[in-house]
Image 1 (tube, one colour):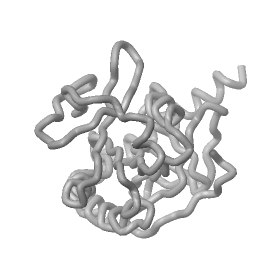
Image 2 (cartoon, rainbow, N blue to C red):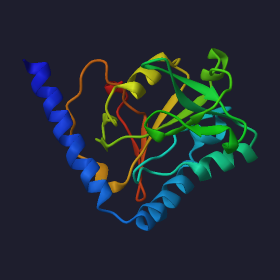
Image 3 (cartoon, rainbow, N blue to C red):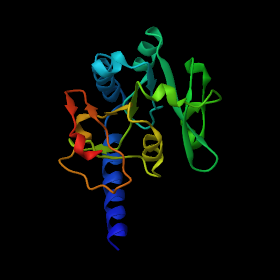
Length: 199
């Protein structure tokens, strides 16, 4: 029963924060996204990473195109998630934005490309979307648990960074044992180093 109550609570929070995100004008979210991405590409963990995993934003999520452009200029390998079969998410390498096509739920994903090799995971940074975050690195995603499964597959050498608007932060989220947290959170106002104990 507790699991059902917790899931209902997470779904309620998800609805609240998705609704809140939709109330902001796209131009406002784009301006905040520029500030967030500018901080992201100065992060030491990003600068030293050989591979960068990104997501395709939807519905006023923090944008990632500027990070992708910077990563291409720095000759970093770039990966995006792709859903294979019914529910199996994997990261695929992308050489150009032209290789992205609308997939499930009309989210841009790699049309082809090779899955991220384990060797690339030892020195990679993964930018993670979320509906809500807390300062301990916990997150609520879009639903379905795809990113939790994706992050759970990665080696310990990967750094997880949540990208969020300041209004998406809450004091504390309740999470389950399979929920994957992030090491850092970047908003338009600050960079938060999350407690390592939450992973």
